[in-house]
Length: 175
Image (cartoon, rainbow, N blue to C red):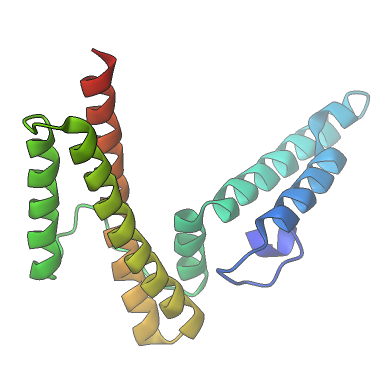
């Protein structure tokens, strides 16, 4: 049973997160190990396995990046390793520019503005890639799935840059 089936949902990138959360809570109540404290050891172990599966499914489906990975894996798309290099030189150049932008924040005259601008740039570019990935996932052809996979890899780079920016912001403003 796949994660979507656990919650009685169609396989789709677009999900009603409120509905997902409500179904998760209802299912989790019925399979939670605490309900099986007086059951046999086998039933207790089964409850733990079911509860774990429901938790894993929920954590995957509520996160758009993990959900996209999961949908692609259901479609049989082999997700490349994160260590695999990109063949998109424009993207690699942009990543270098963005890393330089982050490195220069420390030396900006107005670090607040520099941090704000960096957030704006990263958010805007992330959203553009995210929308492109979403369109490709909805198209669901072999070529569109490859594009979705590439955009997904790129989105992970943006997530890492966001984390770096958050750490930098903490360093700058916690001192």
